[in-house]
Amino acid sequence: MKTRWVRAGLVCAALGAAAAGGSGGRAAWGANGARAGGGGARAVARGEARGGKAGAPAESQETLPANVQALVEKQVPGGTIVSAEEQVDEGRHLYFVKVQTEGAGGKMVTVLASGRAQYLGILDASDDDDLNDDATYLEVDTAPAAVRSAISKAVGDAKVNALSFEVDGERFFYIAEFDKEGKTHFDTFTLQGELTEEETDIAVTDLPAAVKAGVSKARPAAKIDSASEVVAKKQKSYAVDVTDGGKKFELMVSEAGAVASSESLDDDPAPGKKGG
Image (cartoon, rainbow, N blue to C red; front, side, top):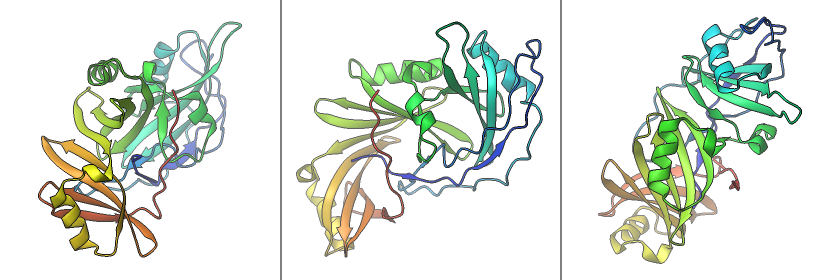
């Protein structure tokens, strides 16, 4: 079962042209168009209401904030800032800054930073070209050190297939997708490296009887399509995808079979898996 995503309604402001940077005016950049729907927000079907909505469009700016520019220059030494855009997600400002790395073999990378000049990672090059993706994917080895360390500890010898990024209220989260012991896992980490949720795909036949009974009671005509086990705050629950009357839903069900939520998936397509 893939992690479900909902479009966060990000609003974008393409930043203005020809800004003089802190490196002898090297950081000259111009408007490059708004990124559509980057920075997905995970479907909150865990019984927790999502607080806040995306704020009003940010005003166009003639200069990249000095603290953000300094952060980008530190992360990509010698690079040239080509363009940047600002997005506002749930009140948090994010900057997608395109940088041309130096040297004959230089390439274009996109650094993701917060308005508070927190380094958040470098976008996966393939995701950077897909402006309609609902999720923002990062290169695993460019994530902040605390996140990389936490992922390494949780994943062990397994390979991370994809690392996505989201904003939920005032917090940033990283979701690592990996395969281990024949199952697909989605582990969620904070910017500080705290593991907050573990989701593991399981076979429908492995669902506890009480969970199946709870689904049948809530939706008697539904067919169970897929399921995953979710552990958050030391509490176990199950995400169960069903088809009912030709429509798809995700039910969050406790171990005892109580249905905590039922959410439509028809308007919430999941992004395709990305190799990495």
